[in-house]
Length: 132
Image (tube, rainbow, N blue to C red):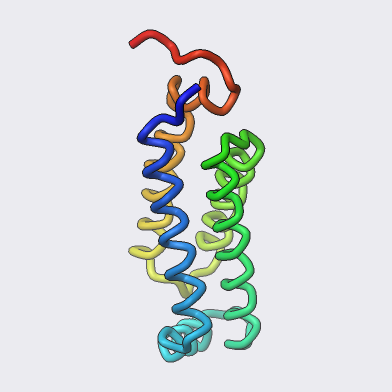
């Protein structure tokens, strides 16, 4: 089955956001805001460990999105579960901006919607496209 345009767009947006996050973290652009956030929150995490954690999550997300482009159903499920767990972790941290948490939740809802539509389900299960 041909890849739905919505799945391709979501995957490429995830890839772009992952690359932006990795380069942002590794370049030190966000170091000041990250330091302020960690100082405001009650998280006993250093900036270097937060950068390493963020870069790892970005790399994993990048790999999952690339796998989704090739029709890997497990990657679609793993992405939604990982993002959901990260969102729960964000809710648990009172020092994080509620706008940031809301953005992450909205992103998960929109991407989840497009990744689990009937046409996407058919693509990931390698079935024929359902009739419109």
